[in-house]
Image (cartoon, rainbow, N blue to C red; front, side, top):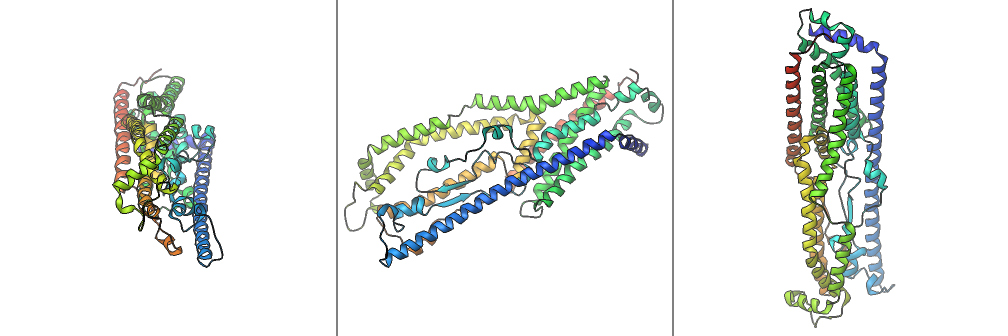
Length: 479
C-alpha cells in the first residue's frame, strides 16, 4: 500500500509544473551560493599567497642589503639596518601568521568574513597587529554572504513548507480523504507515504547538488579532514530538513484549512529562523557587553603613554630583573630607544592585561550563552554546526588567536634578548627566525560540538513527530 501511495503522489507532483520550477530555482540558488562561497575562498587563498610572496621578497631584499653592507658597497642608518634585531623583529623581517580556509570553506562562509585570517607578527604588542583588521562593507557583513549554508538555513525550510502545508487539508477540502480512508490504509501510513516522496524530492537536491557543485568548483572531499566533515554536513542538513517535515505534519494534524496551515507554518519559520536567533544575539550582547574597539584603543594609548613617561626607570628595573640580557663589555645605554621600547612594551602589556582579560571574558560569555540556548532554534543549531564543519566558526578563530599568541611569544623571546645585547644579525640568521605553523583544532572537539547539535536536532524532531502522530489519531476526516 505504501508503494501505491508514493506512486500516486509522484504522478500528482509530476503533473504540477510549479514543483518542477521551484526545485529548479532551488538548485540554481544552491549553485549561486556555491559560486559565492568558492569566490570568497579563492579571494582568501589569493590574499594569503600574496602575503607569502611579499614576505619572501622582503626577506630576500634584507639579505641582499646585508651582503652589500658587509662588502662595503652600502651604508644604512640603524633604524633601517637589516642587521639590527630591532629592524628584523619589526617590519623588516616580520612573518605572517595565517589561518587557511577550512576543508569545506566554500559551503559556509560563516564568520570568516568578520574575523581576520592573517596577521603580520612583529615585536610590537599583540594588540597592535591584531587590531589591523581589513575594511569590509558593513552592510555586507551585517547581512552575511549568500552561500550554501544561507540557502539551507533560510530557503530550504520554505521549500519544504510549500510542499507540505496542505498534506491532509487539500485532500479533505477536495472530499477525497474519506474515500482514501475507506481503503485498508492507516492515516499515518498515508501521511508517511506523502512525506517520504516529498522528502526525497527536497533532500536529494539539497545534499547531492551541493556536493556535486562543491566538487565541480575544486573542492576535495577526500582531502585531510574533509570526508568526515562532508558526512556530518549531510547528516546535519538531513536532520534540519526532517525537523521541518515534522513541523509540517504537526500543523496538518491539527485539522485546519490549507490557508491556516500555511499561515501557521510561515509564522513558525519566522519565529525559529529570524526572531529567536536575533533575540538570542541581543540577549548575549546585553548580558555580556564587551567594550568597544575604540575604548580598547584608547586604553592601550593611555597605558603606553604612562609607561613611556617612565621609560628610563622601567629599563633600569628590567635590567635588574634580567641582568643576563645586559650588553657584553659595557654598561647598558639607558637612553637606547629600542631597549627602552622593550621595557615600555612589557609594562604596557602588564597594565593592559586586566582590560584584555575582561574583554575575553565578555566575548566568551556571549559565546557560551549562545551555545547554551541555541537549542531553542533549529536554525541556530544548524548554522553553528555548518560553520564548525566548514571551518568558519568562532571556535576555530579563537584557536587561531591562541596559536598567534604563542608564536608572538616565541618571536619576542628570539629578538628581545638580541636587541638588549645589541647583537648583529647575519643573512644566515634570517633562516633561524621563528616560523608560524597553523594546526587545526583536534577533530574530536569539532565532532563533539557538531554531534551535540545534531542530537539536539534529532531529539526535537522526534518530539515534534510524536506529537503529530498523537494528533493524527483524532484527525477529523470531514471539514
